[in-house]
Length: 117
Length: 116
Image 1 (cartoon, chains in turn purple, cyan):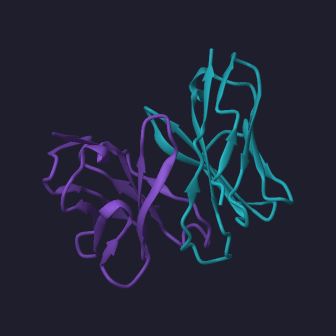
Image 2 (image 1 turned 135 degrees about the horizontal axis):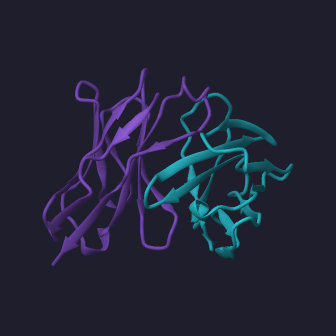
């Protein structure tokens, strides 16, 4: 089975401060990991993914994430938060063996990020 | 390039009715997946289609079905609607390169279904 945990329902941060949104995963093989963001009444927007290679992945809008195999984590980070970053963030995992090479994603429960002035 | 489009955007139905939702993938994308998003259950995978064939299926009752056409457009159908089917239904497309599992899925804006 493949699963994802986002331990924080909400993260509050002041504009200009660094932000971290946490994600841990569980798969039997090597994971493919993704972050998406959802604004109100919108679909999901892709931010970044880890497939293989460098553990630090850079994505859209200044976001990055670090893959840590020993801690089975893939935390999303940004050095300086903006009010416009306020949204719902989802971590997702894909076990390529389990999905038979298909694209099925298993999502976490989401973390609401609130960036205040 | 145009993104994933879904129609209709909003829908109100009553219990027992059936509904069909439509999804047009990004041009050139051959894989389409469907997800259900609810406040209680979060985002859950329904099914994935590639070249008109179902490649993966989630844990939903048989009332939920889908299909894909030769132009990669996809529809999903829910029969005998229940109150619990009220949700945002999201469609996602990807290139569909076979067997890699490495692809990024790009999501449409969703269809919000309300069952009364």
